[in-house]
Image 1: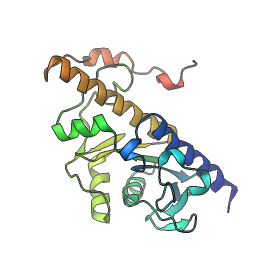
Image 2: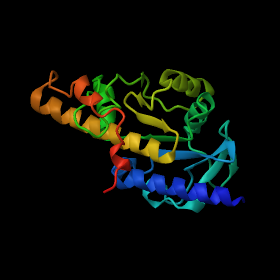
Image 3: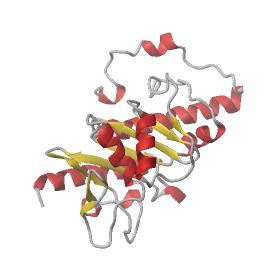
Image 4: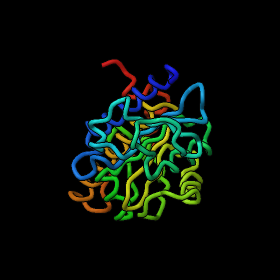
Length: 229
């Protein structure tokens, strides 16, 4: 196995554990989700969390649990008994449609799901992720899992060049040039969804939110996660 595969498997395993650590895949949803990353020197393959483990939970994933699949979603390498996730076609379809995307994250975040089911457009409520929801995000208006080539292509087309797509009553999928970008986008999305829920609960559906001119003040500035702590 190329050393590069081991390095990417480590990064993907850590990303899956981070998704659990920040609350995006816990409790009943502990096994629902997966992060992926292209192999830098072989972009027609990527590493992703699979399924079929003795303990199938994002918080327990290790590098040796990760699987390698080709750009069509077929398993190339991985532990005995494991297989690609049911929705691997979503990862492969997005990566095929967008060569600049190197990582995809899919989870079932509580507040984001609630917003999609209610049909509520997310509005900028705080600094973290304000620019992400400044414009209306695309929504795939189906609750079913994305398993066929047609469904994967439809999701990728609807997503366009957006960093995230919402899946109604199901979850969300983010994409980024790096694994860090895709994970951070998902974290910011759920933060905005949570703040929107609290605002709606306390002030009603017409609650105030950050105006465009305020959000635009952050344009061109270093993203918060990249600033020194």
